Image 1 (cartoon, helix red, strand yellow):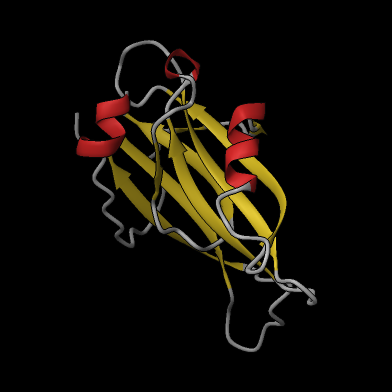
Image 2: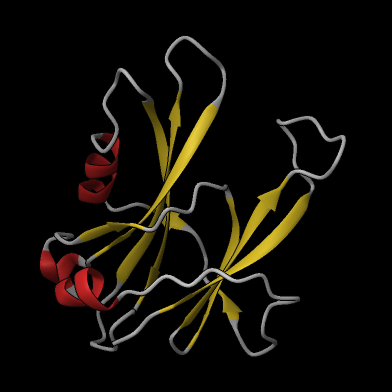
Amino acid sequence: MNSTIRRYCAVAFALIPALPAQAADIPEQPAPAPVAERVAQAVPRSEGIFDGARAWPMDLDGDGTMEWLVQAAYGFPGGNAVFVRTFFFDGEDADYGATRDIGLARAIKRISKDGDVITVVIHELLDGEPRCCPTGESIRRITIHR
């Protein structure tokens, strides 16, 4: 998977009207310890304090081993706001070595996968909503090129 993440993982975000009917949601799981440690160190403490990681395992390259989509939350020093960063991590078979920040900076609501397309539903603020509590959602698709 190492080369897949570095060279072939193309991220294509596009708004789409709905989730594909045949795609099943991928259940969220705790991030593996080595992954949580790496995302905790991905942001200097002067810029953000690691608050936790959410993870979704999936086989991205068809080799039968799980790679991970991980979203880490960081709090701003001295404040009550948080920001998120989203990464792909290679699986246990590669010591969670390769990683790629995919630039998705919105909180994930749910994820599904159908073939080489990962559908990510993210929280969106609607007009007039307080920043704490978005009720809207939008959809992004990530196409994996092997």
